[in-house]
Amino acid sequence: MGQESTSSVLQTEHLTKRYGDVVAVDDLSLAVQAGGVSGLLGPNGSGKTTIGMLLGLVQPSGGSGHLFDNAHSGVGRADLRRIGTIVESPTFYPNLSGWATLRYFRAVGRHGDANEIAHLLKLVDLTDAADRSYRTYSLGMKQRLGIAYALLGDPDLVFLDEPTNGLDPAGVAEVRDLIRRLGAGGRTVILSSHLLGEVQQVCQRVAILSYGRLLVQGNVDDLLRTSGAVQLDSADNAAAARILLDLPLVDRVRPDEKALLVRIASDHAWELTKALAQEGIYLTELSPVQVSLERYFLEITGERDHELRREVA
Image 1 (cartoon, rainbow, N blue to C red):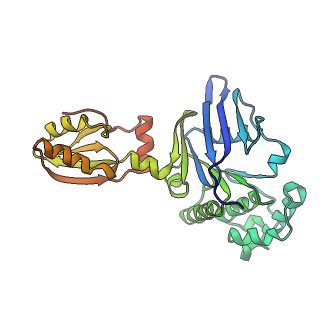
Image 2: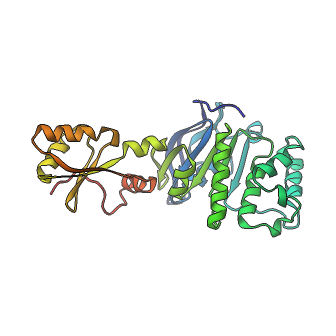
């Protein structure tokens, strides 16, 4: 596989899908950078629907989607050989072994080198179970075999839809580790999930959708850093809040028990102390507030009860 690139492997322009009165994907315009692991994070199946439209499995209601450098919308036969995918929990013939399963699907259309089967079984840690029948596999092993199937033919782009569904904690850890390794190898992996913690752990970039509409997209670390917050306390928090709200870098201020929660990137927190000191207000406490992707998601979707709003006592 090639090295990570700044080019886009996937683009959509105003992509829309309606099922009667239900809008599953709403005017979606996004671009996914080639290389690494990118997440499509949405709670209502919008990521799965988007993938379906890009693969030609679902007819869009409007807009278009492009894969690789194609000018046309949708996916052609040549493109399909560059794509691997699994949707939720894959199911294979129960009496075939892991080795025979991959050999069968390579023969019926996935192509690739016959020698790659051994490589893929090693990659997904199934070498020792290669000759066991599929029905004897644990859920985690079945999921890993599904990922090996998606990698037949050495595709440039891999779609994984809810790959840890139904797995126990050990299986979840195994699959997440495998996804991270796939992205580190230069291949583009697109993970569709409603699990915020999973996306934060394995994805470098994320597009967050709510009710099918794109809210934000970008590098995960950058989004969390710029959405950071600090907690501070002073001798006069009411006066401090008024001063802080006038600072361009401060997004929101909220009283929190005896302290203030201030939305500001943590690497700019020193500007708070400087501004307050210039007004004769000195801090007794200043500490960063760890922001998770879950907290960030709930903030931008307005679903968190104690959202950091521009308000003072």
